[in-house]
Length: 207
Image (cartoon, rainbow, N blue to C red; front, side, top):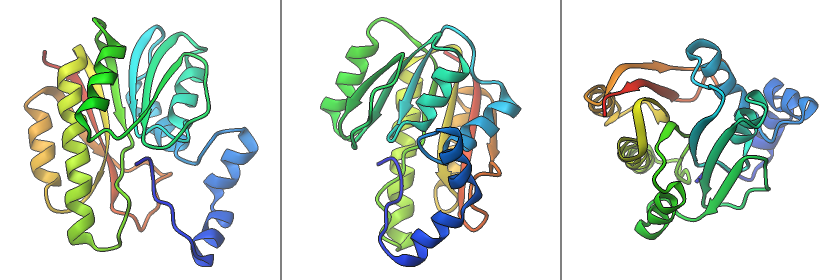
């Protein structure tokens, strides 16, 4: 759920040459995805001390890791992924399939009466390589993430969501604009140039 995993020498070779992969290893981050969130935050300033954050598609944990370190553990994070994730300070991790109602209810129960300042989703489907299959799957996950955000965000809260450009993306962006005061689409430098991956950043939730 949290990302693409493939076998094959060419993919491994690209990983070994990737400057963000190498930088993440040097700096002790769990994956190169950390730089996508860092670059989004550098422009949008979405992270604030003492916030409550929901991290969807969290494994292996680089986004939660960045938030806890950036905010010096002055944060509560509820993280969710189908895959296991090693523990982190200030993070309550739930393992399960976000598309299942029981898992969603567990997340809502963990959040309790609190409302979140930020919902961030790096969810991605298992990639088949067939765009006609992969695009609807990715849009479905984005729609579930947006639906959760509208359930749990505080007024003026923020939502960050991975998208893949293609069928359904424009309608999704228009839908987000109905609930948030400002919506923009960003492609962080850490997103690979050849990928259709972008991030929707929605600010100021209108409760």
